[in-house]
Image (cartoon, rainbow, N blue to C red; front, side, top):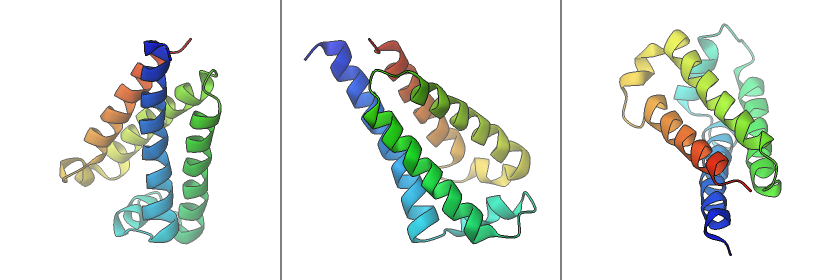
Length: 122
């Protein structure tokens, strides 16, 4: 396997894991208080429904990233989502930015994986 293909695969796998985990664990399996708080900050009343839809959306993005290795679009969508969600948290839930394992560190690491996957694509 070519080194760039291997690097792309590693970056895509890490990115897919990140989206799959954050879609499954704190949204679908156990709705976390942090997720609830971020959803409620937007004035959304159907928190469980919104979290479920967001969780399935993240799981779908994770699968798209893995199942379309030659397609750059899943990486572009992931980068846009990570950047958009980081801005969203900064505007609607800025207190979360100072917590341990916060959206700044997570989203910046995810954006770095997007950059690596993008740079190592065929």
